Amino acid sequence: MAEPQRLETRLDRLWAEWIEFRDIAVKSGDMQDGIAAGKAWSRWLAEFVPDRGIRQAVHGAGQSQE
Image (cartoon, rainbow, N blue to C red; front, top):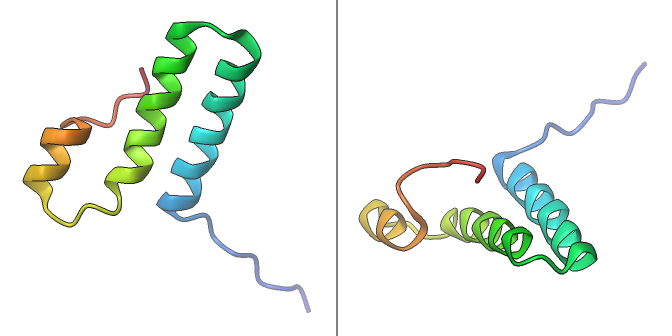
C-alpha cells in the first residue's frame, strides 16, 4: 500500500517562495532581487496577522509576485 503524501499548504508554498527569492537576492546582490525577497517575506508574515485590515495596510492588498 502506498504511503499517503503530505499536501502542500499555503504556508509551505509561501515559505518556499521566500527561500527561493532570498537565495536569488543573496547570489545576485541586486537590490531589485532583494525587494522581491522582501515582498515574499512580507507575504509569508502576513499569514500570521489575524486582522485583515492590518494585514492589507502592512503587507499590501494583493498577492502579486513582483
